[in-house]
Length: 289
Image 1 (cartoon, one colour):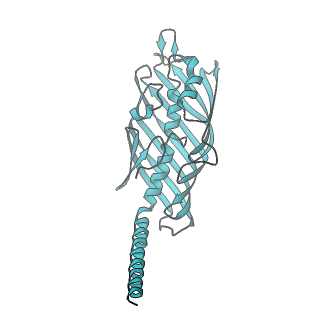
Image 2: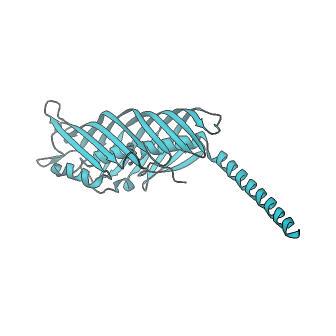
Image 3: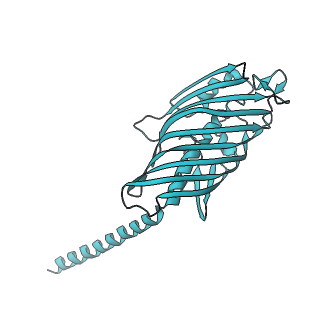
């Protein structure tokens, strides 16, 4: 009889402990899931290399800042963590610029991470007098300015928490000090798309637009795959999103606008959204918790 009483008491205490644990987790989860965090996640993927974000396009660009232009295709195959890469480039003599098409597949559609990235660019090398030249190094003249612009883009990606479909992408960049070991990048970046975000026991969609300004990003001119760890500078801009919850308890603010400042350094992006701060891994495109 006494053993049964002990057993019932033990089960009662255990049930209370479990209830308190679940309640604490639910409270922590509720505190963790906020509109700011979802904006941070979207901005992190907008920046990341693996998802095909800003720093993936910078990776494309830096592989054309090499003295031996015959190595460009081989450099792409060596440095991009992709299962499949194709690079096609043709020179337009009348306009003095390169038309470049790149397609990359990372992983497979049934795994995470996965990305299918298609980009079409124009690139123009300019000499000391500001005129177009065909190659990065033409004769004894190394290009001083490089103009890099997106013409067309499509793609999708998956990370551990986000599935993204790209709707629209646009940017125009200028690179100065192109003949030096560290080049300087300035320009804009606009992306629109839909994220399906899973996590915190909830699933939601985010239809969003990110408008960013890249200010004096200092980029090492190197063929190394970890080049992004040496980039410094500031990215500012804003993100607007409309969030719909497919499952789970929603937060109150579902039409979202946030101004952002992102400090770049050591392979990370420190994201400031008002009083909130997040840190993004520039390679994976995920937040570092």
